[in-house]
Amino acid sequence: MPTPRNATDTDIIAMLRDGYSNLRISRELRCDKVRVARLRTHLGLPQVAIQPLTLEQKWASKTRPVDGGHLEWTGERAKATGTPLMRYKEAGYSPAGIAFEQKHGRPPQGYVKAECDYPHCVAPDHVNDEAGRQQARQRVRAERGLGDVPARCVSGHDLAVHAKFESDGTAYCGLCKALDKRAQRDPSIPRPARRRLTSLEEAFNQHAEPIDGGHVRWIGSTSHTTPSVWFGGTTYSAYKVAFRLHHGRNPEGTVTSGCDVPHCVAGAHVEDRPMRERRQQEERQETQLDRLYAGIFGSAA
Ligand SMILES: [Zn+2]
Ligand SMILES: [Zn+2]
Ligand SMILES: [Zn+2]
View 1 (cartoon, protein in one colour):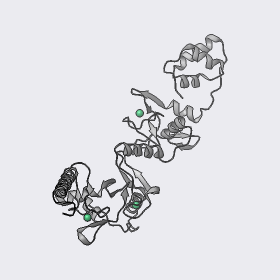
View 2 (cartoon, protein in one colour):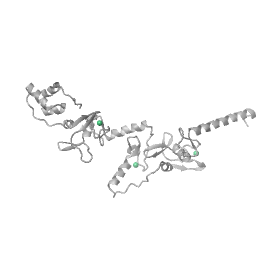
View 3 (cartoon, helix red, strand yellow):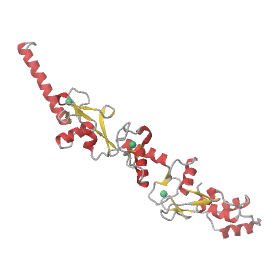
View 4 (cartoon, helix red, strand yellow):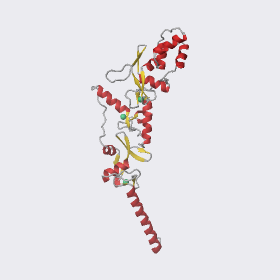
């Protein structure tokens, strides 16, 4: 419901003729009540009994536009947090929630808050609900190329259901977080039996299984065809982690497995781009030598 900042006489007269009270007109058009009263007298229109405000009108009467398109809440606030509050017909409402419903035409899902930098802004364009926030964060995740979310968290919860996203797009398990919170509130509830992974190396080793021939089989999840490690809300390539652990430096370019065991993550078997290029060049040279010898001694050589 956009409100004109400077009401014209025409606006006011239109509302006067529609039978609205001076108070309601002054609130809705954000103009001086005395000016409305003066126009009423001038037009010879009768006074109107004050009508109770609707929920939206009461909300609008407690907001004030601020530079930058923000909307300040001038009404009641929660003492401890400063969160805007509104009472209407003896019920409590969230002014941010009312703003959300104005913009989206549906009740919000989950907690509504402002996403702009103006504290507790209630501009309909600046607030979002939990569902909208999560969608926006998933877009951030996709833009940053953080990869697919694994099927399960470290506690085995289904992440298709429980994955949540931070504002930087990193993911975490919402169920684990909720269980942690509950345990914090009530110390009598035992903390979920779950080993917290403290390093990327630990997360990697959990899914790496040494097998014969110095190979290491990957038993964790894969993103597309790359073995992936899930740690601290981000997916890492297990090849890259194996490379870093083995060589003690960051790889250059993509890391792939250089041996013939599919998805082998043995540190000595993975290679970065320069290593791969060197190996391929050596293989080409060998092939050329083979041809050369074949030319001299026949293909049986
Ligand atoms: Zn704002
Ligand atoms: Zn979990
Ligand atoms: Zn291998």
